[in-house]
Image 1 (cartoon, rainbow, N blue to C red):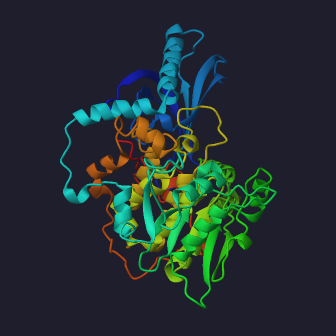
Image 2 (tube, one colour):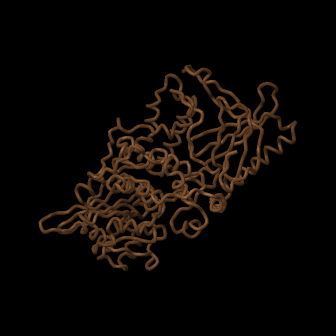
Image 3 (cartoon, one colour):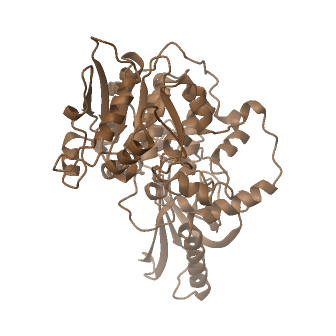
Length: 558
């Protein structure tokens, strides 16, 4: 049986799995449905189905935390009318697996006990505490023998080191502030960068004016031009158009980093990921968007641009519709698959995110202007835009070490709510669940497809990150902020990047050539945006041509 350090198998069930396959290699007609006899096991980490007949039915597995919901039903046997039990597992990666008992529970007490014991063990590990698995695995993993990692494959993250690499610490116009000295925002990292001319007292006033105290902070800086990317949450403007002079001064100083010159009018861009209509709804709740007339001076002015990116709820609806579309027999012969893909709206989300990132890239890298990015609270659409812009502007972030730094900084450090967005440890429908990080991975895939030689990492690394986004094997994607993680997880759980170190060669792009001739500009032409089939349809057995991976797709659980 497959096994990671610290994993133990705790219950098993003789059961049949629903499956589809082709009767002949060159038969493109309807798939044949069968109930595959085998054994379903649950461990402290995974569900594992071992079929009696391996061809064409390889074993199936998924981490228990990757199961969104388990539904049990009582069904009537069509042959003799007796009642049998079945289980349907709806998984967070879009898989739906159905199993049915081959024995009749009313007549077989042992079968009934076995079924309920299996369910108890499944619920125990799937929905009781997202951190326990990661802690058990790490305790066993550090004791297990591992091959030494070459120095060139070591992945080490330090936010302060990234600021040093950018040249921030050697620039007098900006300063590094440690939250151990001045606590401004509990969902931000410990090191924050601001213009030097803004005082601590003014920063505290700005924090009170921004939603969740998430004030504007520099996350990327070009010392040669002074152009910067800053991020924040929305201001607390409200219907009364409330102002904050300290906030206006901070934006002015961010704009001034590019250098004001007599007779030259400078622009500063405020990129709001939301639509204009959405910001009006937020104003009714005491929030909203900056009023550009309040952010200007004699030789500069701020411009507010809306990127029209959908919220977490529309993204969730789109991915659910896309997953449903990729199920076997989801289409009849008269349906247009690509028309159905378009109707889910998923590629529309990808389009608007890439379009917004392109706007930031053009402003920062070509116009040498500063940009402030925010959405509502600044922890969903904001990191999508900031990450993609930096990935395209700075070639360092297109390396494996750079991608590690980018995700740690923009997503983990600045408080993306992984536990809520991934619905860790809950079987209940959640309005907070949303594929925000999956959208980032899809956008990076689109860039890799358009420019296949400029990334050191390959598509496999994106798939591995998404597989472990839900697995809870590592502490990386647990909890909702850096502060929470540093208090409970960093000393007691492993990082997915330590696992990437051990498998470094697996994720290297053999075509990689560092590109340093300027920014990478994504194409948002609809013809250049495609469905990410290796993720969304990797479990779809209807695909042709059929390959060995059709029934046994690549997953990165172990």
